[in-house]
Image (cartoon, rainbow, N blue to C red; front, top):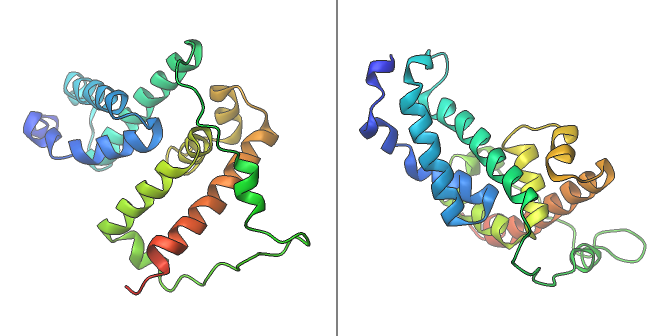
Length: 188
């Protein structure tokens, strides 16, 4: 099967890999670099591809490691970009009344499984992800898309378990609200 892996075959998966990397890294240049490194690693180790999974799954596995390498490197380097000043607490508090009940209850999602098969849904999902604060989105992607455990996320990002859970909760609330507005709230 490794003979079937060539540059043309790998390039068929390139756009998917770039989108995946951008969702996690939130920087198109870093994402492009991670995908390049992924494709080079795939070419260099194509003999290790045993076809027990799809080629895309194998490539995403390699990409996950490349993304983690970038995150590790970034955590050791001083960050030059200034936070945008958004207060996540205010966003979350606005969703609830003082008694803890929803200010506007989330609507029922008619057919989420069908939506997940729709390419446009994933474009909306990416937009929603991009609007979340960086650390919130990063923790969500590490947990839900990279299948990392809470302990692994905490170790990678040097955060506490409680902080990780809070960020995951905020990410889910933010995604729920955004998808309610931009996907499930309009007639499909």
